[in-house]
Image (cartoon, rainbow, N blue to C red; front, top):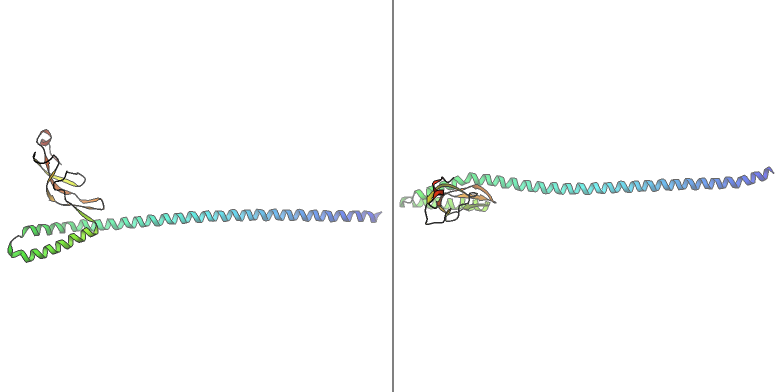
Length: 191
């Protein structure tokens, strides 16, 4: 009887061992599945981080390029602003010496003036020529007014000093004389 008990217990132990092994294999597979899911989640997090870093870098590069372009424009504007008085000096020198004995000097001055003017235009400076146009306080500075009915009210009659614009930014407003119609408003000062 003891042998039978042993025989009946042996198959039960084998079944228990198989069940334990299956349970252990199932737990191992579950751990591996969890680890695969964790690794997949980590990989996705890394991908998202990489995408964000790439977008941040692209934005930084665009911002740096824009700031660099703006810095170049500011430096060019300062250069043009410093050269405008030189251009004015040439204009005054050309206007002052109309005598025949200054003709050769005048031609030299005209050549230098033209080169300087052309180079400023190539840099982007645009001369404001408001003569005969309506007064614009964004582009012109009224230095004087003339009471007249020959021209429309607010028309620029004379330019004392030309103005310059660089990429939409006024470097120097044109100094002008403006037509004003007679009447109560003409008694007040313009400026």
